[in-house]
Length: 560
Image (cartoon, rainbow, N blue to C red; front, side):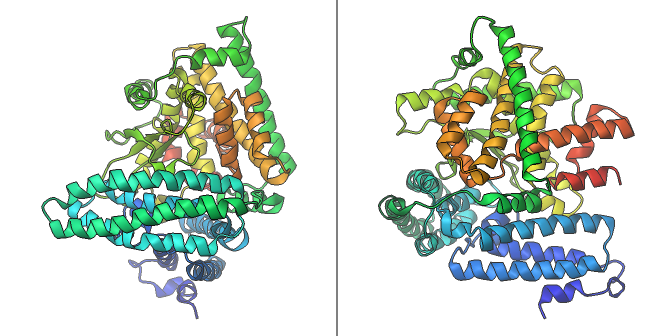
């Protein structure tokens, strides 16, 4: 009998009063197997026993993981049938959704056969996670880098064996990521390793040999993507209605019929679009809304000043949180603002990479901003930079840092259980960050400046467009180009940015979680304050203390 099933069938009475419960043992086993399959994730959450291993993405290991997940789901079913405590049941539902979502990706959607980005991004992320956080002496981390580098060529061999007929959109992005990774290993990794090795010539020599093999492998993979895979990348990215709804159910606990789901997104888009038009008229009644947004984006940084300009602006949002008592900030540690690493430039414009909940020493968090690519023409570069105008950057700071992702993740070490420390879903994490944008402006951030409100509304329109475009790309046969045109028309996006956003929807089907989560958190806030009273900060503190689990489970906790 499967070990996990045996654990699940142990009666509660057989466990010592001070020992771990059967569910706690199951959760330990689930996460141990998860990080064994994805050791780079183990490193990212602060569990450094995984630092020297790299994800095995070969077909036999994928098939073994599928069998493992099925056994775990059966064990969990038996555990839940015997009855669990309130908190264990919350965690059990969270884990079940995660396991079913992973199983859907591996067994049904078979992303490992159709998405080369999985392989293109893994090596850079695995090495960068060891370099950028000072959780151990540099020489020790360099040895882990070498161990992982020795396994990187196998990642690309698995890719060549596994990938069948991906969509062209996926292969194009994988080429960008792989090409950028060449410079990452030649430049950033090599410079860091020389410093980490110090006077240890033997250690540096071992690294140099392993890194040379990695550079050759990455170059070879990029060439293979371009010459071999790209010509035969004619697959379809649409996953269809059934699988789209299944992903939402498993990953987010969202269960709505597709027409109702789409209608909710379109209604929010119409509402925000009307507010955008009204606000644009306040700024300049004689210009079109698109021209008014252009007016805002005319004031943008140069390519060289992009990162410094964000660094100069981030503290405005933090100060406002403190002055207006909007939410409690549990730490004085600040994020570092840096360029998005090349291996991670898959279409996002800004992102937050925070220390994991089990990280004991390295407190560095990275707020990434995507720079202009060297091979972009002047028009593409200009459109990219226009996004980073001061009012929009103010909203991005709110979303990524204060009180968005960075603040929520500062609470992670305080979450009450291992499951809530280690699992986060989009409607919660991204929903909270997007909710924060409108909430902050509603609470007076920006001093009533209509340009700040317009920027907030443009950010809302972008997420509303993602909501609609994601559904239509995957259930109604839309092309990426149709999605991009929709984002230009309805979201007032620059054409180049609109294309990047729409293409993201091809590989991130359910990125409606921003707007959907925002709406649900607004409803939860109003319900909480109506039933329990208290200040806005009381609700915010209660909400962020629960972790990133699906919102129906957060609601159950708040009203238990």
